[in-house]
Image (cartoon, rainbow, N blue to C red):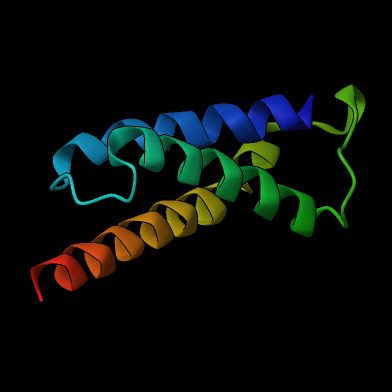
Amino acid sequence: MAMLAWVMMGLALWHFTIFLPDRFWGGIVGAFLGALFGAVLFGFVVNGFTVPGQNDTHLLTALEAVPGAVAGIAAVYAEGMRRETAARA
């Protein structure tokens, strides 16, 4: 159940990438994958590489994925910017 909360939080934060210039590595799909993988990976790390069950899932479980989703989006954006500047040179 916690995995669903992490993925949904990553998906929710991904929607805000429309306000940024499209310089993501892989475009909007790259931003989507970065948000999802970042949210799930960070959720795993916070919970000791286990997925909490239905009885252990609460509102804060979804909020645990926020830093990971933002970091995933930032990593994909930074890689896209790096590739864009390398292509110009």
